[in-house]
Length: 477
Image 1 (spheres, rainbow, N blue to C red):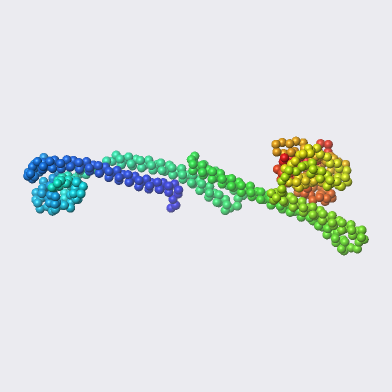
Image 2: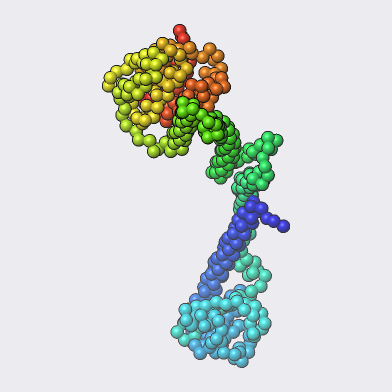
């Protein structure tokens, strides 16, 4: 039969306390018996000194001892033993001259070495049990003996009051041990049940119908606090595992969707390149037609190159953000470089680019990523805002840690609000083919969102009052 924790703890304490109690009882009884024996020996020692005083006054010891023995209580045995162990007088044994030498009697041996000695034994002379007490003097030993009968045994017997007290204390301790063991056992049992539940959950696949995690009510003590903390950590761990599993599933779905999107985006330029090259290789063409198809194939390779470059940048921001160098970057100088880089497309669509930003305003960030934010927002306006528009960039407020910017255009905007919330999704397009018709990888605004997030900022987009789009985002000082 398996013994539980409560039974083990109780048994351990019972054995320890039982041994302790037995030791205390035996020690106390021994001490009490010893004290009572000493009390009897003191009485017998008084008789010894009376006999010694009488022998000092008279030279004929036998009549003196006979007269003393007559005065002593009838149960007292009186013996006089010479220094060599010979018995020279005994009031109980008439023929004491024939008694064997007493030099090796325990009480005589002790008296010889310590001055006095005692022993309880059966007399070899009359087969009666005595408590002997002997004392050594210059020329002899005086020994008195008390019959070790019921009366003496009762006197030497230990009292029961202490025993009753110990038994009562033992019972009380057993009850206390049982109470303590029950509290300990309850906490241990609940921890065990909780651990077994968690183990069972690991061995079977959790479903939405799986039983909830048990809520154990632990005792209000230190062990209960430990148990409750362990249980709480188990719950947090399980919740974390569930959250991780959901996140992994979400990531898997996003990767699957992204892979599909990339495949879809690659298919068009690859098919275009293949078609152009097949036309050049398999059909006789005039130099003008041949150059047209080769240029078309080249333009498609530019689309592929931009797509690969943009995907690499997004991946680097997500997986290796620590590799980007951070430094103070002047925004006005960055915008001047951007306007010079895009002079041709801006001039082609008659787009004017303006900003209202202090010349000394600097942002703490990565220069290339900050450039990509404004570059992709400007590219987006060039492609989709239309002609004869104005791009406006303002720092409209700042707080303790961030500058807040507005990037707007006066173009056509997006009438359907549904599309605004999805503009930052990778490869999302309002109408199929929009990105391909106007160029670009379809990842520009996704790069903008990731670059802003890299700088711990936020970005939103809305239709501008009066027409066009407005992007509101923050960047660290």
